[in-house]
Length: 383
Length: 129
Ligand SMILES: [Zn+2]
Image (cartoon, rainbow over all chains, first blue to last red; front, side, top):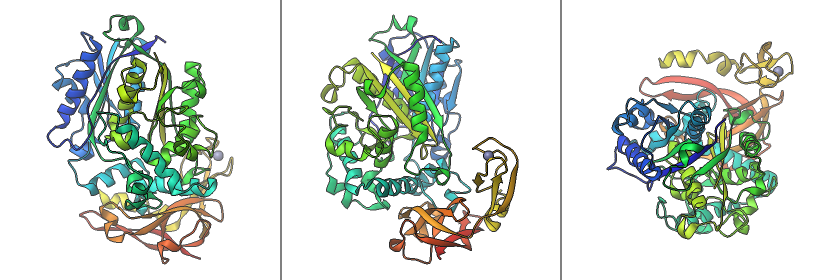
């Protein structure tokens, strides 16, 4: 395999972008990434999007992006893995460059979620679960994480305050990120007093509904020498699946796909959890960050709940997690998230993260998951 | 075709039919062709135990349109006495009174109506034993 580097990033401020159509989301993030890279050509486009058809009635989004970018006739295809679509697209782009099939690949993550009603968004996100044997009975997407949260809280004696601390931390980080959808700080009380969505999860335990896109330009190490900025290598790639149905998991407190994806990425990069200096972790719901940092090996099992309250995963802590605000504060246009995470880690490893910079960070990790960890993606980046 | 989508699932949903891998004994609801434990393909079908317990649960307060009239309602992961697992609603009890480990029994109930067609789908809900 050839070495692969990120040479350009493009990410916009996520939010309720009512004035911006899907095609412009694609174009805005992509043009920014191509200009940042300084490349004069793109050989292929890979787009991650979970449900653009359900949310906007537009499928065929990769061809749409190629067309409006003026990049036709380059090949353009879409990759889907629910909320891990962005991570899956990054992996597919990596494979194209590593294999030599393409030399310069534009990886775009995009989702436009606010054109439909809240009801329809709830129903759309629930398509990540088994339709006939989970959603059928009335389970919702937050409900799945709520059931994991209850199992975890009862096993490890965690309190709602432990979960809330994750949201508080990520909002504090988001307040330092000019591209975060929410730049306000919140308190544990704010979280606990927000309405219950699915017990024990409150509204502020949940990431928001967002529009947005993010893009990266990947190329071979040789082409990367001509890039405008210091190339950031992708040294580890891991992806794994688990039962799509939560109810079939032997241990309801585990997200085994995250562990498997992480092991594969660590092995490929010849790195261990202790080598990671900054991480972007999938906090679609607060419990997901708690479980994920255990599966990633940052803390022992059962101790994920203590990481945010103790400051371990805050900026200035041993392993800062979600310095960009996470899905919680940066926003979560589902297909864009895995790519936005990569943009944040590249920004950190370039030393361009401003007030939220992790000093001297040279090795970073992104972890993105689909559904209730039915899919999981992990990438390791090195300056 | 929503009617086809509903009736083709009727055996597992109406009869609580599960699959059991003859190779390793793993149970599946619904039945499936390939065992995800040993990849064996000799799967026999049988009926799921009608009693079991709550492994974890939640109270849904924000629901998609098909269930919007019913909030708040409880959804749980159940482990039946034969070891089979399913996810369904727990009803005939105040949601706040549900506990992990609570004993339940399955009852045949209306589950939902599908969109504009109004097709009614049935299945099993759990009630306190
Ligand atoms: Zn088997």
